[in-house]
Length: 366
Image (tube, rainbow, N blue to C red; front, side, top):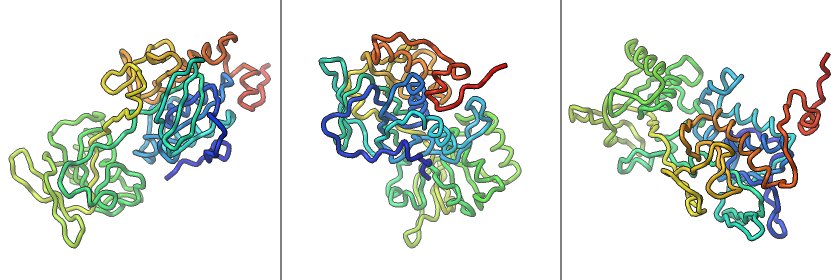
């Protein structure tokens, strides 16, 4: 399920004498972190990227690698995996160095204005700037609180879908009332190689926090008896020979019914955990980092935050908004990275300098 990393961006985290000195460290290798590499690369800034996962892609790869995304500009539809692969391809010219399977444990401001950064496995950096693109932090799915159920996790109980084919021909019970629950319920009803034998959607009330079009599709499929919807909460389960065989669902009438199943998929959203970020002296509002909207700087000059990790008036948690934030953050960081240099806005369409940076030929216009 890993995105395909090109050799130019794989880092084996070899031993290094003393801290690695760099202009920029990006924390998070999701789509926004990858695009931050691109925006800094256009300004000829070399970067190191740190991510706690073993591969690039962040939530897109970890939670919905095959789920279609429709709101990336000029890309009518792509999956999380495809988006990650395209971003990795786009940043190839810039030679970013990736440090996977490690988090950032320490960030300390130094007397010379730089930051000392250390990861959970002891890799150390001295960097002029830090870009936090950590999504919702150390994200963890909210779990279904039923005693004994964790014993079935990753065999019959799932909090994300990595390989849809694993669910083909199965009797599925899907729990949740948000976009992910409805998206996957609709996906497994489709006539595809991973079509389920049956799909039952369960939510605690007959109202959803999801796209209206998908709610309408779900109700139409229920009317056509191609799937079912139940109002209630999973309060227990039945098992036989060590296998989960049914979910006990308590309805609004206080009656508990057993719903047979092969697999139980739970989509209650993510529980954001900032982890060590909370101890770095940054202004925090409801587990998010407060930033300005001029350069997306945090309360500590030199530390920027882009994507879902930040908050500001009017904030929208969309990938495309994170891309916009990356551009302004990159320009906002340049007075710190190269204070002696005046940086001008150049266009990739017409700038020979950017064409050289990107490794492409400058077009000839009549």
